Each structure stands twice: as structure tokens, then as C-alpha cells.
Length: 190
Image (cartoon, rainbow, N blue to C red; front, top):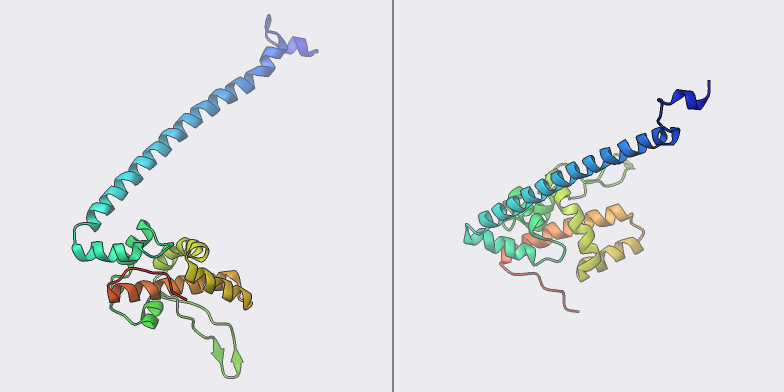
């Protein structure tokens, strides 16, 4: 039995071979159109959510002032500022260590008798820590004060994740102090 006999009468074999590629291309075009439509819907939804959050933030003068203070910190944008205000409404009313502990960013020593393990962070508000992770990366790169602290920790032999956790802690403590004092962030003068 030859390959010619497997093909339908009058249809060259090369055309049959091209058929799966043609079907795949059509199927891919359909999938691409569907994905583009979904992405457009998601973009529209995000735009509506941002608009709603902005209108809610402008409802109260105190809330708008707190958001403005938080947005003044390099590395903290609109989403992070809103997350800080929503997830930690006590911000500005606490001491620095209390704010860090409430967020779950205070180092807790693991020890028993003479044995001493590594210090770890635990407890607190995980959603807040997650909301501050990427802003801490941005702050470690672009906020001059936090960049210097991050580089000092790395130079001292700390792991990058530990140094980044310290930056998240500093952002919480700084945000708490700025809101408590009612002032915008300014670069530290040497």
C-alpha cells in the first residue's frame, strides 16, 4: 500500500499534510482573539476598580491626607498606600516596634536554653507583608535612604531576602512615623 493510495481520490498528499497546520493556525487565531478580549475586560475592570478606590479615598479629608503621606514615600504607590490604610488602620497611632510587630515584621528569636537558632518573622498581617514586598524591592533600588540600608545589610553578609524584610520593616515604621507626625517623606540630609 503506497502513500498515494491513503489519500482521498483527486487530493494531492501535500494538501492533506498542510491541513493540520492550517487548522492549528485558525485555532491559534481564535484563541488569540479570545485572550485579547479577556485581557481587555480585565483592563476595563482594573480601571473601574482604580476609579472606585480613588473616589473612596477622596471621600474623607483624613483618609486623603494619609494616602498622600504614604504616596510621598519612594517605592509606595497608590495600591500599596491603599493596602496600608486598609490592612493597618492603626498606622500613625503606634510606636515603631508596635507597628512592626503588628505587621508581623518584628524579628522573633528562636532559642531554648543554650541553643540559639535564627531569628524569624512570624504572625501579624500576612496580606500587609505581601502588599509591601514589591514596593520594598522598588524602594531598595530607588529610595536613597533605604537603598543605603539595603546595601549595608548585604555588605554585612545578610541574605538578600533578610535585607529585603528589613526594608519592609523600615517602610512600615517610616509610614507610621510620617502619619503620626502628619508630614511628607523627605530625603535624609547628610
